[in-house]
Length: 287
Image 1 (spheres, rainbow, N blue to C red):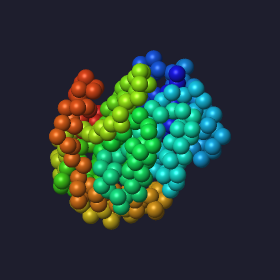
Image 2 (cartoon, rainbow, N blue to C red; image 1 turned 45 degrees about the vertical axis):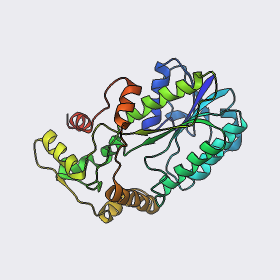
Image 3 (cartoon, rainbow, N blue to C red; image 1 turned 135 degrees about the horizontal axis):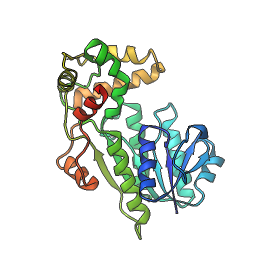
């Protein structure tokens, strides 16, 4: 049977496909633009859109298990719920869903609230699902590296509570392991939620200190006020998206993203290796 990967052309999704191929799974990806789907030989590419019901139904033909990653868009919730309904209609009940850390608590942040709603559908409508809840992506730092390098400022307002940033490679490998586990299970497995975190819980000042060490020159933390962050985001993304990013940053400052007891150990056991660290990421970028 085939594993359908939705969200395959992004930072996490590409790694998910790679990990599944390494595990000899039959993989199909759904994409609006097949020209962007430069995957390994053997990966099947289906063209379609999550709001195009005909193409979505066609993509689910012969599928046993679904990986669902929705982009942050104005209609993300509609896309998620329609996709899960079409999966259910197609007899696909085995799902790995990429949610977000503390989805049920950060109810004022749109893409958190959306994912909490999708989680509720998975839990209440009979799916055999693994819900993955990643913290802040380390890979987001590619967007701000020029500010760090050229101005000596770490500009993300992540606050002083601490954020356990996670590497996209770790997210994807856990996702692939869970997809294979659910796909190969002889029967229906219960719904499970896994927090995806990094090995270190870092404050804004901690991250600035790491960059100072790695670059060999001072890098300062830009502070907790998200207003400047929103203004900067609005220069290259829609204003509603920039505002949503501000709301998310306010949550970092007020609550952080702090692992529960045992989260790091659980992930290390699943992966059979240590988690990728922020310091290693910074060193690679600096090199």
